[in-house]
Amino acid sequence: MTLLLLLGGFVLLVGGGEALVRGAASLGRTVGLSSLIVGLTVVSSATSAPELAVSTGAALSGSPGLALGNVVGSNIANILFVLGLTAIFGALVVKVQLIKVDIPIMIGFSVIALLMALDGGVSTLEGSVLVGLLVVYLAVTVVLARRQTRREQATSSGQGVSSEQAVSREQGISSQQGTLDVDRAVGGGSVKLTKGLRTTKRRSIMVDLGLLAVGIALLVVGAQMLVSAASSIALSLGVSDLIIGLTIVAIGTSLPELATSVIAALRGERDMAVGNLVGSNIFNIGAVLGLTSIISPEGVEVASAAVNFDLPVMIATAMVLLPLAFTAQAIGRWEGLVLVTFYSAYVVYLVLYAAGHAALQPFSSAMLWFVLPITALWITALVGYEIGVLRTRRAARSGKLPGGGSSAEEPGRTGAP
Image 1 (cartoon, rainbow, N blue to C red):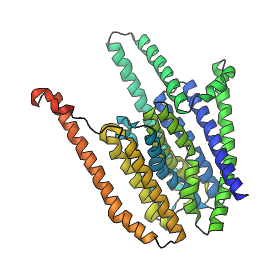
Image 2 (image 1 turned 135 degrees about the vertical axis):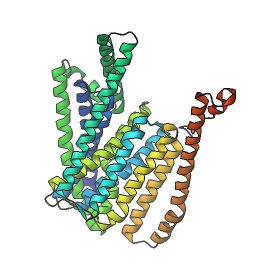
Image 3 (image 1 turned 90 degrees about the vertical axis):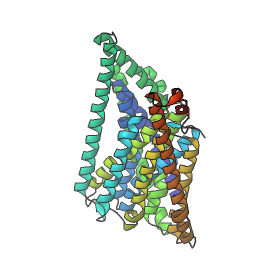
Image 4 (image 1 turned 90 degrees about the horizontal axis):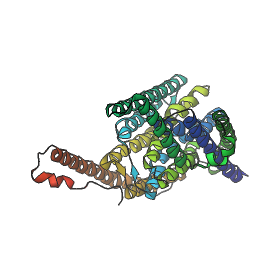
C-alpha cells in the first residue's frame, strides 16, 4: 500500500507539474510576456510547484525534516543530477546574463538560507524575508528585460526603422520566439490538444486557467500521497525524514525540472534548460522555503545534520556551476557526466550515513582528501585556461598581437567532449 501511494504520488506530481507548466507558459505568452521572462519566472515557478506542495504539506503534518530536506535535496539534484543528465543529452549553452546575474543570485539565496538555519530553524519572519527577496528579484528581472527591449527598439529605430515598425516587429519577434521557445521547452502539446478551444484570446486564457487549476489540484493530492508514503518508509526503515526528503522525495519533485530541461535540450533550447534550473533553485529557497516557514505555525525546524553538511553541499553545488558556466559559456557532455557522478556519490554517502555502514568512514575520507581536491584543481585549471584564452582574443582584436592575432584563434573548451 505504501509503495502504491509513493508511485501514485509521483505520477500525480509529474502530471500536475506538466499541466501547470503548460498552462502557465501558455498564459504568460498569451498576455504578452517575453520568452525570457516566461522562462525565468513562470516556467521556473511552475516547476517548483511540486516542491512547494510537498514542503507545505510536510510542515503542516509535523515533518519539518522532510520539508527542509525536499528543498535542499531538490536544489542539489537540480544542479548535479538534472543539469548533469541534461548536459549528457547535449552540451548546454549558458547566456551571459545567467553568469553575471542569476547564478550569483542563486548562490546568494543559498548562503542566506544557511545563515538563517544556523540557529536551528527558519522562522516566520525569516521566511517573509526570503519571499520579499524573491519578489525583489522578480521585479528587477522584469525591469532589466524591459530595458533590454527598449534598447533593441532604439537600435532598430537608429537604423532607419520607424518607431511604430520597430515596436511592431519587436512584438512580432517576441511573440513568435516566445511561442517557439515555450512550446519547445514544455513539449508544445497543450496548445495542440486544446487548439479547438483557443478560438479567441479570452477562451485561450480560460483554457490556460483551467490547466492551472487542474495542475494545482493534482499537485496537492500527489503531495499528500507522497508525504504520507515517505513518512511511512522513513518510519519502517528507521531513518530520519530528512534523509527521505533529501533522496526519494527530492528526486521525485525534481521530475518536472528534469522533463522540462531534457525536452528543451533535445529540441535545441539549451540556454532555456539552464535558466529553468537556476530559476527553479531560486524559487525553491525564496518561495518554497519562505512560504513553508510562513505557513508553518512555528517555522521550519532545521536539523544539525542539515546545517553541518547538506546546506553547505547545496552552496558548494551552486558555486561549482559558476566556473563551469563561465568556461566557454557552456556545460559539455563530459562535465555533465562528472556532475551526475558527484550526485551518485552524494546519495551513496546519505545511504551509508543512514545505515551506519562501516564503509562510511573510508568513503568519506576518499571524498574529502582525494576527489574534492582533484575537482577543485580541475575547475581552477579550466577557469585559468579560459581566462587566458579570453585575454588572447581581446589582445588580438585590439591589434596588439603580431601576425593578425592568429594565436587568438586557439579554441577554448568546447561544449562537447
